[in-house]
Length: 293
Image (cartoon, rainbow, N blue to C red):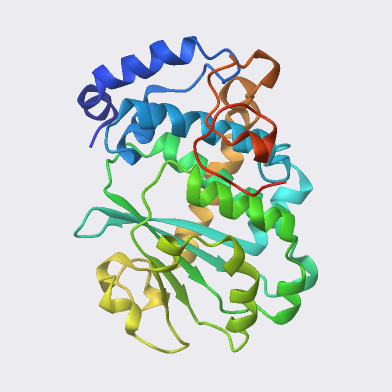
């Protein structure tokens, strides 16, 4: 679907969000029509829910600088992250109009694995796709390939950053999660679950499907014509898509460094505009109770 058609379909509600946004001086004002439509889509075209999601989205970004600040793709830290992990939004939708996003380890050396940078790069790719993908979808299906991960990788995980990652991805990301697939589950899966379980919402937990090494069970959910050749599919090899997205991130440096798209100024927040529980971030109002730092 083209950008024009997508924006026309949601025009009235986009205009309503734009009018509301002008009255929220604490939020970034440079939110493109395309992105506003994504918030509406993820909220079933409800203007009120989209307002809450927009405020929550940008406020959690403000509260999570480890994930959303200093996002220069030309920095050594992020170039390294993009070289050791592949982030692959796949090109075709499922029969239910779901978008697939494959996440895999490219460099298995745990000494090169910096958890904060890897998670930051993950959201950089996700942000760029939301802003540049004009295709309307009915939901998202992330696929996490655990091949190459070791217990040493697990020790690199910072629990504070994991908590913020889980809060944002489950509560504030303008997508609708439909399924989550974990490929090549390692023998230490129980230890992974011990880390994530405290932060995992029960309704999200029900979406997760685990696939053992060399199994074909993924094809019960995702047809082969939607997957890269090296995952048993008919598309080109995953590296082609990974390379394309690495280049897109590097080519869009100005996009990430433009504060008018991202910056929240809490001192300008109207007293009645916050949708986050004041006990979790020191702000008035309530939307969802999130235990974040």
